Amino acid sequence: MIAFIQPLLASLIGLGLLLYGIIHSVSGFPPAQVFVTFWDSIPQMFSLLVFLLCVAAAVTGLVMLVMGIKGMRRRMLELRHMYGRRQHGYGYDQEYGDPRYQ
Image (cartoon, rainbow, N blue to C red; front, side, top):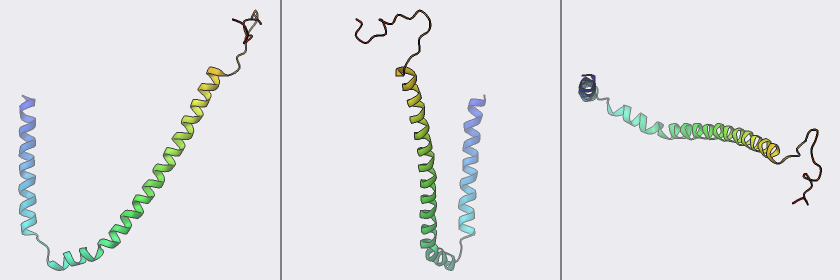
């Protein structure tokens, strides 16, 4: 039953929001001076958006740099663990550790 009610409620809410938006935009239409003021302030808003985009790019670059350094450090530790010099305990055959041994 819920599978039927949920889309029905979503449709009713969507219809209500649509009607509210249309009625409010028609009845509350602003005067022309508001649009002129908005049009004059667009370059200032654009420069603010560009500034915010630059700040976001700098923060993203810093995060990526830190993640890259951490990843390289982790990879270097893995490689050092895999291919680094191994210490062997008691009873290790020295000939077997010789690179010329086949």
